[in-house]
View 1: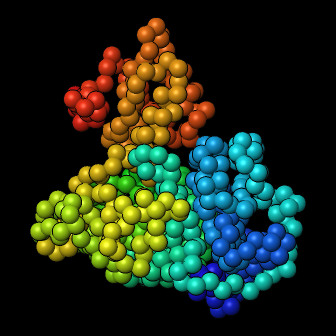
View 2 (view 1 turned 135 degrees about the horizontal axis):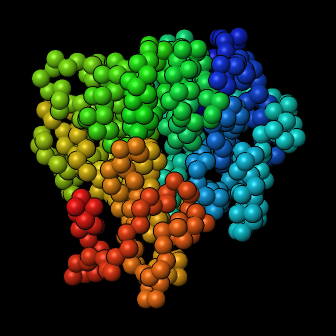
View 3 (view 1 turned 180 degrees about the vertical axis):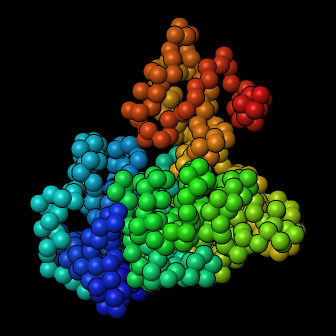
Length: 509
């Protein structure tokens, strides 16, 4: 069953309900949003000749057109390739090429940088830019019904980087996303028709995936006028729109709770705040609960099992009378309803309670594999289990606590930053001999990027500003280091491997 049926269903059941708002202003009812998506789908299929299963990339910030592109692509029986709008155009172009996307829906402000990046490779890919004549013709084309798709057909191709090599395309089917949506209702929030989901986090990631349960209930979908996360704007919307629900990175939760506390603001306009995408420190969630009350739910997932490994419920977070609360508030909760979660040793054998091992998960939410990457698929999927690469333990009640990441990924402001990507960008500078990148705790962003740099002889005058400019020419702005430490040599073991543990010790000192 095509996931787009949920929009068609809500348009039939609640045609006049407000569906899409920018700030307080209603842009489309459910009937209008479905009609525009159906017409866009007709344009993609009949005017552009895209066949079922063809990939369409979406490289856009949070805009009202994101929703109609997302559902229009699915409605047409095509595959969504969401791309983080913060990526460098060259990074986006690589994803578009690897996915063999036939079309790119791209925001006007991003199109100028993307177009030349696309021409560096193979044949150029056509762009569909909201607001231009091409787009207006697309959403005025002849509508088509929702196209049939099998449950295991590809629906969503999400690119997630590894610690080595290029990003990998996670293949998610209609079944995967339907199971994720069912888990939302069972484990995260029941959702009421009067709720309003606000997209303060990127719609290319978890926030966009969480549009599905809210479409199913016929809720309001709010795009902030700023297009992103601004605590003062969210407080205003909570008062004017009400019953706000949002997905937020831990750093966003902290900033919002701090603003509520500083202004002594009334948090009653917030219904549910779902946090995930990075480590939430126990002190921070305690402070958020103190400021805003029992409005929080935590989820733990990966692109490979989107938003659906464990959940820490609102009721557990709110009940401080429970003897184990202090431990549970620092956990990521228990397995979601439609998955199994284990902690295993390197051979895949389950470990006893409270022993640390790798977190593995299986169920209908787990990806089919990586796009055209059988080696990576075989490494991640073993005997039906997804090996997450995260280290954790499970207590006797089933609560999972993440202890460390077996990968060196840095999570800053809810976005993944992979040291190898930054290192490869820096090492391309002719003055850089060696570099190693690590993360450190940051009060605002969760973690920040620190680069330890060894310069070539004769380049001692090179400063952080020059390296910053070099990074901005090669990788996304949010990935660049916040600090450069120039050192004479990197600590290494007998095999020549850089000892990042020693670098982290230097930061602690």
